[in-house]
Image (cartoon, rainbow, N blue to C red):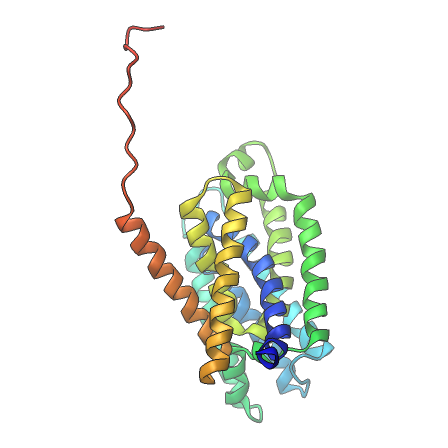
Length: 285
């Protein structure tokens, strides 16, 4: 038992950090109704990593991280510029086609790189089970800096996510704040994709946030619920991965899917909350 705990300690610590950052950011993504922006940014960051790999920079190196970060910032600029007060073309369409183009470019470049197919597989599934403590510390440092920035700017970010019309009416430069949000978002995505892969990052962002938004109205409660869901799926996924020798990232993703199914069943069959009839007359003041 101690051997299991020792082996899974670093992967679980990485999951804790990622759940903390991505669980919160996922709430903003869902409230903004740009569900696939996280998947698109993750794929764009992966494209940057593949370009770095093509030029001989191994995954996890500083050069690879810088390539991924540069690609993510370009993606942030595209998504911020595509935000309109009165949309003639849905922003999701722009995000979707950006994802498709980034995916196609990743395949084309990887096809020309040695062992490119294996690299794409690793970018999708991740290798969090083999994460080391120095990598965990690096992710924690990056997420802590982004967390402090979001804490300081939380009111403005919350307004633009929940009440964009009010922000436009108040004269807020929404595009600038969107760009700032997506840059910080892209920084977290960049370090996350390196260890967790595109699929796991997307699942961490969306699945806990779905449950949190459906179950709570207050930000503090939503964040707490998202963290609980993400951590529970991480524990179950890592244990299943170790016990049955499964890829850890996909195992965690499937656990998140299972929790979503259980939550949907609970919502369907839970007793309906009935409002007691009012005893106040309509003529009362």
